[in-house]
Length: 416
Picture (tube, rainbow, N blue to C red):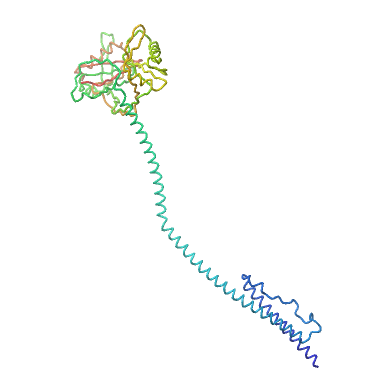
């Protein structure tokens, strides 16, 4: 009877041990589920045997052996409990760190919001800074342009100084006094008289009166019937129209002068029975020789308005040496002539301003038919417009162009 009791007791003990072990294992499983992120404590788990039933145990299990097994499982349970406590502490530490991270995230979000607010506040300043940078770039570009313009002005100043240092000699020109006397204060003035050319179509005439009042009356009447000359076998009248003569006169003129380093101007040339090419050939032949102080000639030109000759040399320095001489004896044909050597300055119009002007004494007659010869029509027009009864007066000049022809009228400044 005692043995069955022992077996029953031993069976309950084993079953209790198995349940305790199973309970401990279940607790460990729950702890691992709650703390999967904590990996540092998994290595300390105590693994229990897979089969805790008495069927797999030794059939000759003695109480001592059973007690040893119980003690062994108690130690394992204690180890598991220790692991559970450590895992709980690790979980609590992880939660504390999580809370710390959350607080830090809140601080970072607050800082980010403050930076966004600050960025919105600084946006106008940033735009002003961008505008300031753009303005600075424009100012730098303008500075470069001004510096470039200053360099050009400096180059022009140096060129003008070089021209100022040039010999003050001028080419020889024959001058003639024609009786005009000016005021004393105008003695140093250089007067440029305009000379305007205007095309005159056929069937028209220009009529200049001595008094501007006469021209004004003719213009106010506008239409005029001119009686034809009966002696020319052409009776009747012709109807012509009087119009004002409008011209564009220069009001301001700016000329840029440039002194050439390799050119000379030859004046005082004699009037010889030579063609232009022959004269230029003789001058080039003389000034191309080094013994005469010259050099290789690159270009030669005869100025038709003045009769002077411009020689251009290939090398620098030749023109300067010749200009220092001032005058030089040049053999042309069988005689020797003294020519004047002066610097050559080329001019270019850089600014020309014009203003409209109406001729006070001149009127334009148009619509003149081709029914008389040129001389007869001129006489008929002059006779008609000289009569005060027709509104006319003393005629100073008359120019007539018949139908089918073209004329060129030249207007000069009125000296009166």
